[in-house]
Image 1: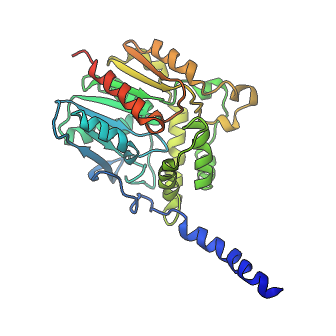
Image 2 (image 1 turned 180 degrees about the vertical axis):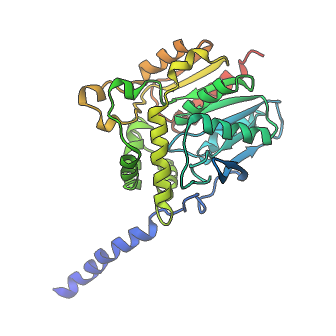
Length: 335
């Protein structure tokens, strides 16, 4: 009897070890995760520290004279834009996609005062180094909040603004979502796992759908939180969530001068702190079918494009439809 069960027992004993061995671990700056395009590094001093921003810079075979800067979201990276980079480059655009300080392949400072103004200033310095003084700015998710702030700070540099399911279209704090301290966010971030990321992304980013190719981005994010340096990653993430929650930009949408293309997957339901919001409020948060229309009215020169069956990441969920709409919107820019 014992011999009959021995192989099964040995297999069961080996499973935890196998799971540990296959657990993604790419290092605190995604050292072992490769993007589809070469990565450069911009080194500079910020808040008394020497830091570096990783970035992708793709020059097209047949330039059309325009450049697009892609700003990633909270749980995304420059590398996540690979399909968009390919589509834009093929259409003649030079494409620059940075990893912001504290994210992905860039420096994770031990201490850093995060603000959208600081991240915009960092990005402006990078573009100055690359001698890009007039760009189309495309921001997704948290990158949409950053893109809006950048357009307000440097209006003469932004010829067109594109916002893809930007978060911060409502003020969660003012609506009654409880405040989490950075320490509370930190404890939450220390528990990050691939399983938890996948569950959240399926419900929010992809409107309940899932495709095997999405696992690449789940593992990328989970790999940041595994292994040595994960405490630094989690702490930076906690500070970034505090920035997002406490620094709304929607009250200044009326001051944006650039013509704006607002691209909304209406099945999105993203709202920071929704998980701890009172139940009646939770049901009302993150209604992008409504928030997109409201935001298009608030921004003076906005054009709204809606994707009725898509969620928070339409550029990944349906790249063909998204890029067709994006290229059309960019081509319609009035010079």
